[in-house]
Every structure is written in C-alpha cells, then in structure tokens.
Image (cartoon, rainbow, N blue to C red):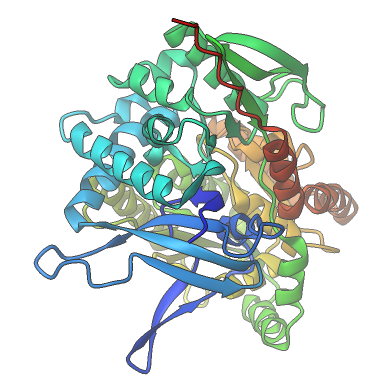
Length: 504
C-alpha cells in the first residue's frame, strides 16, 4: 500500500459514525461549517489514496479493539484513509480532560490562577502523544507532510521527527498562545517547546500569538528570529488589545529553520447562506420572528468554559435591565452554554454559576408573558442556530481570551443584508479582523455597559453599514481562502539536504 503524502493529525474523526441496519456507516459531518470539512478539503489535489487522517477512538480493554484500525473514506474530497488510534477511556480522561484541560488550557488562555498541577499524569500525556506519532509515521511517506492540530498533541512533532527525519511537519494552534512569562509556568515548558521546534512550520490565527510563541522559543531554547514582516492593518489595527504591528515569520535553531504562519481561519458564508435559504430554515425564521412579537432578540453562544465570558455577559444583561427598565419586557437573551464532560469539575462550577445567574435574572425581571433569559445547556443543531443568528438583533460575544471565535463570524455571515449588531470582546482573536464590531473590554463593567447601550441605540443606517463592512471581511477571508494559504505555505516547505559525512 502506498504511503500518504499528507497526514492530518486531529483528535476528532472526520465523519459521523452511525449504526445502519446492524452495520457501521460513515456519514459526512452535518454542519456546513466548522474546521473538519476544511481540513478534509486539503486532500483535494492529492493523488487518491495518498491522504490520511489520524484520530483516536475509544475501546474497552476487557473486550479489546473491536473495530478496524484503518478505514477508507470516499467523499467529495477524494479517497483517503482514517487511522483510528485505540485509546482507553482512562487514557482519554487523563491526557485530554485532565492534563490538557486542567493544566495546559488555563495557561494558554492566560488564567494561571486556574492552573492545576496535582492531578496531571505527564507520563500518560507523553504516551498518548507517542502513540499518535507512531500511528502517523505508519501512514506517512518518508518525505510527506504531517499536519498536527492543537495543544493536546504538543509532543507529537518531537516523537515524529525521530521516526520520520525527512518528513515535513507542520503544526497549527487553534488556541491563543500566551506571553512567555505565562507559558513558563508549565513545568514541561522546554520539552513542549523543543517538540514544537522540531516542526518545519508552526501556525497561529493572529500575529500576537505568533509573536508570543517566537519570544517564548527564543527565551527557552535560544532560537533566533530569522525573519519578520510588517503586519497589514487588516490583521492588526492600531490601538486594539491584540494589535501587533510586526510579526516573526521564521525562527532558526542550529541549522533548522521553523517557518511561522499567521492565518486566521474563516467561516463558510456561502454554505451558511444556502442553509438559511432552504424552505425549512425560512419557516423557522418566520416562527422565531412571530414568537418574539416585536421584541428584540440578543444571542450569546458558546460552550461552558470560564474563558468564554458567559458569566460576564449575563451580569452585563442584568445590569442593562437594572439601568434601563424600559427594556424590561422588550428584549430577550438566548444563551447556549453547552455542558462539558461531567468529570471536568472546573466547568461544572462554571455551569452552576451560569444557571444560578439565569435563575436570578429571571426571578427578578420575569413577567407572566415574558422571560428575559432562555438557557440551552445542550447544543442547538447548527442549522437551527443559524436561523437564530439570522433573526437576532444583537450577538453578544465576550470571551476573556479566545484563539479566534467562529461564532462572531458565523453571526456576520448569517446577517448578510441585515442590520444585526455584533458586540465583541477585544480579546477574541477575530477582533483584529472585525474592527466594525462594537469592541469592548469584558473585564470592565463600564465598557460592557457602554457597548450594550450603543448596540440598542444604534441607528439602522449605522448598523447596516457596519454589518456590510464586516460581511465583506468574512466573505473575502473565508474558510476556502484559509485553506488556499495553507496549501501555498505547504508547497514552500523544504527539508534541508543532509550534510555530507566527513571521510574517515
């Protein structure tokens, strides 16, 4: 069997696995958006059968591995293989839910006070990363490209380099990357950094995170910044919280060059528009408008996480009703806060606080015919969520720190031709692209209150103008353009020729 020219290493499998007539059927992901369809699209242009996807699949040790380790998938992106790495539930719990989420996640998001060390089993984290590297090496051609995604696989590049010294290894962070003094809280900082510097390319969404990484690499390993570039204003408007006027584009460590990529992922506005124009979606939109009865709808969408700012959004909404009693009965807030795994106690605490705040607000302000806040703790199907975006007057997106935040871009894409208002935290990565949003500082009550008042009082003309400008950004820099940039960067990757050996 021919080895793969491109192996994508990602924790999620690239399909939905469903039981059909007693068998297993691999169905494309329902959502027209999201990162998985985009990653799969990179298999286009590769010789059929020369693409591979590496993910985990849980098995029960008492039963053994009762599924095919490698399956072939045929879809619109051509044929590719999926290598399912068997992991036990205990391994996933340890390396993903504990080490990744309780130790690495808070540091990445600059929340050192939430860092938890005592439960970490670093040996299991190493073991799982080594298994991912071995599974990747098994599928990858000697000079192929491995594209590894996100911080839970930080150690894979180092292990893979030892197994495939001539392969081209790229890594993409979907999260923020913190300043060096925060990153250095991690006891394993040098091991992590040296693994990442085994890559030929390391990518981030925005210039600030690229620069943070380069400075941490320089401080920990002595890597030098070999090349830098001035950042276009479209990615770093002056004076914003995440502005960065100059970005490193290449590091050098010894004789090894590490290219640094800055590429904010986009959404799929055409796909979103197609969904919204279906008869089912248009009927749902009519129902939602009728149910609102002339009231305004505000949406705040995310999963349960202390970094997402949902508590701050609820408190701001409560203050709004206190400050402007004429809005009581005239505006409704729809909140989705999708629960994390039940074993992740830090998120359970956040969920309880969110539920408590919703109960308090509703208890204080509800009327017989009106409830101010509706909370969904389970995910709303994406097609239904788009209909809510389409009719919502305001989208409140206030993360305390975020790598990018696709919710903001999805809301804009769903509001083509409309006058919705995006209220956005300066600390969301996408804020550097969306300067026509109402930007706020989620750490400041005054800033949040001012932004909500401005959103409510904005004229139709101003709202339409701002939304049109943001819609152009979202359409010009969509997910396809992101994929094209990645392809161009991969085409430029070259492994250095080995140095000739000295004669004996």
